[in-house]
Length: 75
Image 1 (cartoon, rainbow, N blue to C red):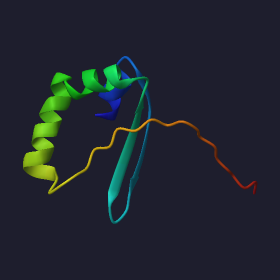
Image 2: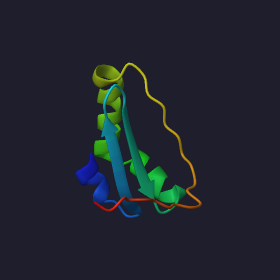
Image 3: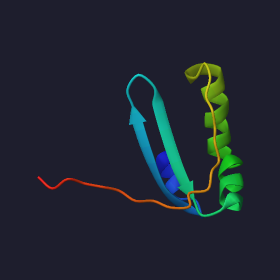
């Protein structure tokens, strides 16, 4: 899905982590881009398969990122 998402208008990036639980955060230009992604045919099929096969449960959150900053220690 990440490869397909990258091809969509309005896609800005993705971050993912997997350990005891998994989390994937995708970033989009605006709500319209998110709506179009949610209705993309291949994504719809993956959503259906996810509900039927892969996931017992999941949560989707749509949020506005108002600020970002980071820290990286030099070696």
